[in-house]
Length: 70
Image (cartoon, rainbow, N blue to C red; front, side, top):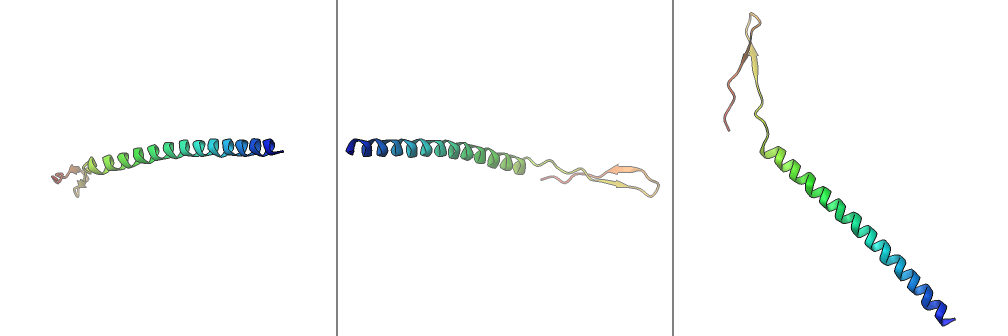
């Protein structure tokens, strides 16, 4: 009877250990994805293209306006 308790305890311990490792693996993957997304956002903020502005005249011609320097 005592051996059966130890067997149940070992099986339960193995179950929780395996579940912990599986969740830890998913959390590490999620952290890597979050870091990649943060780096993409920082890149997009730092290297934002200068917007191109256009104007048109009264006779319908489209002129490129000078771009502001940063």
